[in-house]
Image (cartoon, rainbow, N blue to C red; front, side):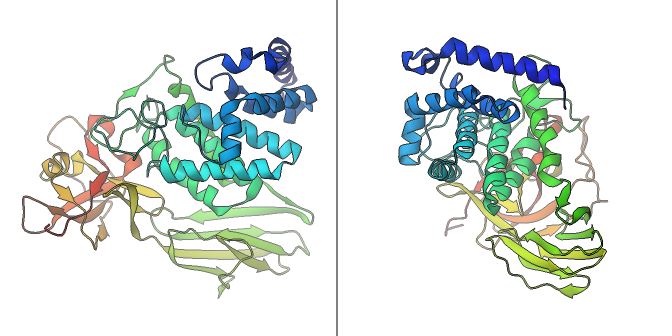
Length: 431
């Protein structure tokens, strides 16, 4: 915010850390704290280095990276070190920042490998990590009311993923960001925005708290505050400032219009992401279909001729897909949004979801529900109101036919004390 006094205060803290804990060889800094709690500060020290240019900070971080055995293990193998996911993301963020400053491309590439390993083996379909504030070997499990997806871990994962995107431009990091933001982050916040979950399970109930007694009450808003930075930015080019206006109907439908107002004589290229989950993607420039090709994987390049205004119309379908948890357990996903069954919309059929009596058929399909349609709830709990809902037919072991369940985005499910469920087994042949 340009507050010099705050920067100077942070600089004094950074100087104190370096002075107090140098040299790293004596081991005090590396042994301090629980898990990675001391080491996690390297991300903030590198951030401070970026603002001040203080090379002592970068030198200290380099010594920590060199002397910390778990970091060296990750840099040697490219595999995640299993510890608190919040601290791990913070440490990896520090390593990424250090790799950028030192132009160590191999170090950055190895951190990308670690990120891939976390996504492959430890990330829940809803975009967060951890069970009981830890990463563990073995398949992920859908445990009722489990202590999974700590909100601090969710937020720090967003910070790490965003920085990797800024440094590489890879589309997979954008998809990672939208998965976490649309699901785990928003699901951890209550509908009125005033309460947060410490943990956010995949089924049964959310336990919200409020007040200054838990770290997640502060970490969650840090993630929410970061969202505008993930979507919009001022576009300054060599030819002048370009004004970008977007009118989007996503995620309700796959339709968005982007208008660019450009300086006189300006030409350039607009790179539009083509989500891996989208189908029938089409972009039009000023009414004409633009070729769906690009020089970077996951993007469509649209060449913009000289003009004061460009109108880009983007359309795509958002199909229903299965998101794997482990073994034969899957979540239903529409675009980036994981869907859940909320008891408030499934009063007559909730028992089947609660008691593991339903499964996903091989050819699952869904139908959107009119947003004006209301469901009567016999009690003090409010219905889901005008949020998006979808009809999905699932197998029910108590019936010979498919039964219809109402699904809603995971971020909206389980509020007001209602029970919900997100992960289901695939139907077996006998079903």
